[in-house]
Image (cartoon, rainbow, N blue to C red; front, side):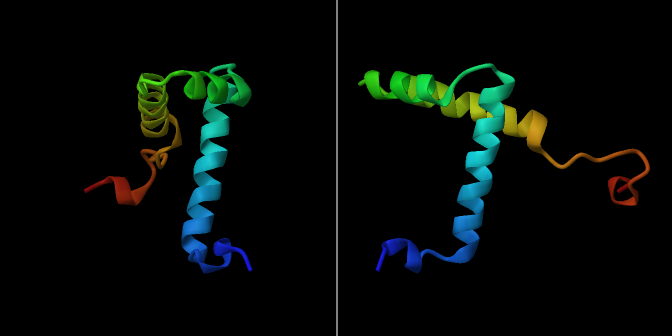
Length: 77
């Protein structure tokens, strides 16, 4: 039996969603997952990982947030 069986379903769904969003960011930036992975693994200082996660956070805030339109009654508060 795998330890994954003990991970809550919501956590598994959140992980899948985050990975898909990360792959969309890489596609938008025209960068391969293999390049990012090798760059992070070769950087012992961890700065490349920090920069990648910072860029991912920025991408999420700008592109993946809830899209609110002017017609949406919830946006008028």
